[in-house]
Image 1: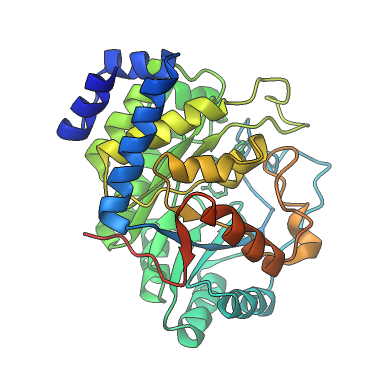
Image 2: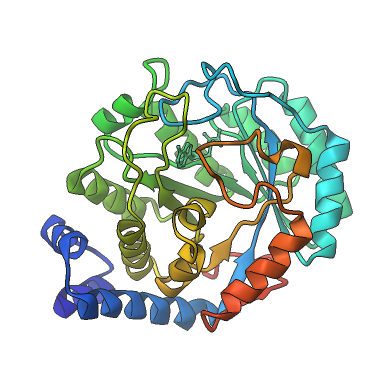
Length: 345
Ligand code: SAM
């Protein structure tokens, strides 16, 4: 198996057979070799820095009905909220004081945040925090809308492709959502000049080694600056509430493979990984991840942005999360840094 790891590192590519072997491997020594090569690859580009992104959960209103998501439109027992510009700026102020130099505005697809509203929010953050990167994660919008937000000062956009297999995509989403439109959005974001993040859930219902292979090949060809992957975790009240959660071990192996195939990519150790295992994020860092995204959202609303059950840190203050993560990351030999954490070309 070590020869497979060496071959992926050298070619920055993988075959379906190699992927199947790595996913099925039971030899601890070989799996640890995969993780240590990925860690070494990450450190050769970014040293032992781990970048922080302050996550601001803008709204849990959503017009979409993704079958996996806890804030899907049909989930009627969700208490819905929206943050105002003033609340967002308050989160940024707290975050900046804690050393955050990237703010991620994420939310459901909520028509209340028209281009005019979003441009005002983005431009206000840009004028007050010229030393910070602004990342948006607001789902599918028109090319014109992406362009306006970019012109207002946004630098990065996260839009997970969810799966690069069109039939699998159709089984995770309602008929009115389309794989082609998702791909159109990703392509346009890149053309406009955003640093773009794609990604997928590990263990989503219907996922197979073949669909994962499609994901890895899509990422290799698309060359995103960021890749967000984390385990699927069932959310009560959704059609997938009784489906099994994705595996932490598989997520770690995929993080390592993605790092070996894309040495420069910015790769978060996600909250979902931390939710599934008490040391999930630390293990993610040791498998080649180099980003963490603690929550800066107002404490009152955190429990309502429940994409899945038992989400981590919903009761903590931002400052508590910062201190806790700092301690956790140090145990890996890496350290949180006060830095925008841009993609290194
Ligand atoms: N609406 C935006 C979008 O579609 O990109 C951003 C918000 S969306 C809730 C953010 C991500 O949460 C999705 O891309 C999805 O991969 C992840 N997610 C949703 N439900 C999940 C679940 N049950 N388990 C793990 N991740 C989930």
